[in-house]
Length: 442
Ligand code: S3P
Image (tube, helix red, strand yellow):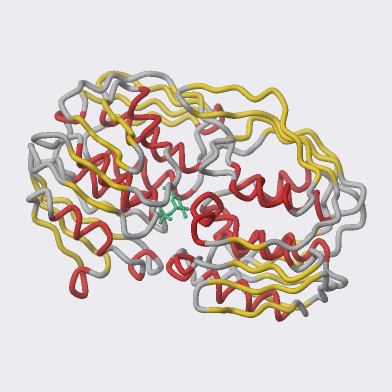
């Protein structure tokens, strides 16, 4: 297992870099390519462990995938959603919750058996949230331990019974699973979303000709439209950029430009929260394509004030809470995160992992049932912390190490390649080189 020793940053961070490509879009672009007839050329694809899992699963449905990692390009060739065949093997999603939950929606519309499973972490994540609504479509579906966990089995059918469903938790994965299944419906289906979550699936399905409408809280899916392949140029990943943004805000005299960052309002809750905290963050050259905004961002070192965030704001920054917690240790006042119970069922129990790690470095973090209370500013000391095999926890601890008084050692950092394989390269590009990786992989 690889370890990293992070030494305090010895100088400011300066740079003008391209935002790493977006994982969430990459999963969807490949899946929507599989559902569309023709050749889908995807540019700026995020090649990371999770999206490789998606590509491998799609191949098992008989789709042709050509991947060109050096060019950041993937080509998906498909005869469309009704040409997909029963998967020829078990669908192994690795560590990727997005792959499992979204592919389950596709399996629902394919006649035959799909079996979905993944690594130890994925097999402990809740699946009843997709099993119960998918059952309304008339398919046969079930999971381990009374439908709580993967492995899952699905015997799909075409057409499916149309359905109405209200999302009990604001989850883009559950919503997207149901949006995909509804494409095979025998009539329009309606999904009620009381708290909005990222809407990339809706935008991309519309871009290939899907009839998806939103009225107030209700998303309406009208099946029967032919989905036609088209090229996608994907924006950069605001969730990965969040680590670089945090580093630039925290380190004195830093000045950073990040280009082509996805700016969909359902994704950039952290940027809005940071601006309220007093962060010097500005956007320029913002443009929009297929309903998705992107632009460039300038970040300067800033003195930060504390923040409070509630349940309604969580979906737009769900993956950024670990790094936002690191920033909270340096903000003036008491920061409060509420309504974030979903973090307990991510790749790790993130509320627990973050509070354990930050307290170990001398921070004042209190864990509540559904959130964290963090007092600042507090100088972090060095020490040993754990990644909990969770990419976002590991990268958050790296950034904490940059501002600690003494070295911070983090174990099991291979997990970083789940979402951001170039993380350490990008840190080097903006001037941070004071780390030592101890690799035990032969
Ligand atoms: C994702 C949705 C979120 C997020 C995950 C990616 C997606 O999960 O945490 O990293 O791509 O749809 P939930 O929908 O479970 O909140």
